[in-house]
Length: 286
Image 1 (cartoon, helix red, strand yellow):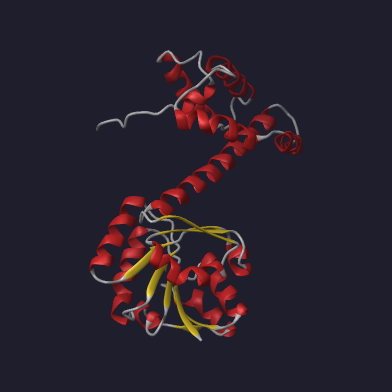
Image 2 (image 1 turned 180 degrees about the vertical axis):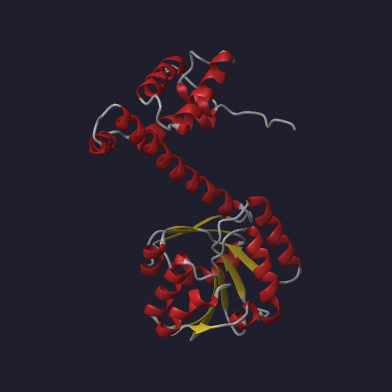
């Protein structure tokens, strides 16, 4: 019987615990900063621990499902007195890539095995082992936990050995999802201003093909070449029409898009395809 510890029983963490217990073959101890949030899991068979060190004592794997880097670092410091020498810490928290790389290096130096494995899934998917789990780290270390992690998700993607790669990939995925939702919010406000039902906007969006746009213009941005198919100046005119239609309504993403377009046009890029929005830039010095 494998013994697993899971620290952080928010919505996602609870989903993982429920999934682990429902599939059997695993005993689970849990810890949460607010104990009351973890206690309902006792009815499912989880052991509730008072401290991180108590939770991880005797565990083969330690799963972290926490808020951010600061909480991860504090929790790892608190659990170390109870950590078994051959246990693996698997961190599902969305974290800053540079801090992730530094964390791996520091823990490696202390002989502690740590892997970053953020997920693209919500609580129901964590419960039913669907969605996607990213993982980065040394091949041999990933191999130790591959079978167990694969049972927790629909897709386990080892993105590479570089320690911070999964952290970067997770931010890519979340940036896309958050930007899409922000754009949909702007569109809903625009159609409100035009006195058109929001259901009509949803119908039009369903008939649009954003995946095709990514497939067509993503390689342009990758290669930093922008052969014109839809000129930036023409796209900027359309953005002006959007803002005029939604005048008085909040459309923050479209307004930010207009500002970026204006800057590129001022730089002389107006005749290029509007994919030039993703022109490779040199970081600004402070």
